[in-house]
Length: 366
Image 1 (cartoon, rainbow, N blue to C red):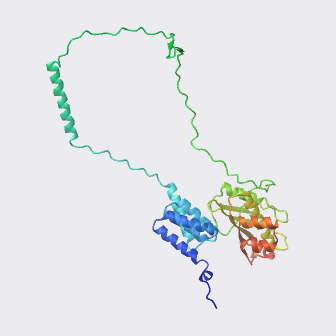
Image 2: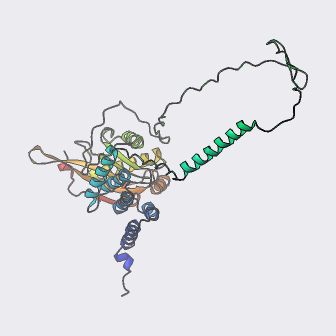
């Protein structure tokens, strides 16, 4: 029997080696080289939490705490790593202390020291000038030959109405001088237009309703951007098979650097469906199609579905029922080839790393 390939036994060995090299570069102060290598790995593994933690470590080594906190929060969304909670807490605390710290006043340069010979030189030159002036006054100065003074004839001033002629012989009209006009001051700051996103084939209909919070297992306090809100509105325009809209149960986070997004939606209460698993997978596929159509900057995404399970004595628990990954190229390929693919294609081909919580069954849903 031929020996097994070591790369198949350890599929993450190469990635672990790359992460170790990035850590060595950070310790050596080679932050730009470490960031470049981490960016290349993120493009190949956009859902890897360890790479997001490594990017946060690079910013933390440069004491760029707000950026480090953002990368740690994205890593937490992807499942987290050991020790991530401590790094995230430290980055948030450092960013908050830097924000409230007193401004650093730069030290002014000291005036140059005067030479001790400068006063002596000034006194000496002044004394020589005084002696020379006294000599000129006593001797009457040098004797100059006498000549008759020649005075130039005076020219009467021209009246204000007299014309002035130029070199070509034409009269030049006097030009009144007025004070220059000062342009109105521009505003000190200008607000950038809100992000509108790309044109989408989906139309958001229905009344505007208040967005209810989605309870998730990992709490992230990062505020939603205009891009996140636009993606929420677009995915929220979809409806479940029973006609209920998704607008109340959608949250989204878009990473503009890697083009990676995380979309989370919740099962509506008392959903009536013959196959809950197939219903959720089909809804996730529709959400992915709408997301890629609405935002041309998204290249890959993770879709999660939350479910609320009824417990004993009226207690309820919210868990992750479904999770899957896909890319823009995969969605466009199958959508162009088959239109809306069947459930087998969606589960096995369109989505990668599909996971369903075995504890979520129709009889346990709230």
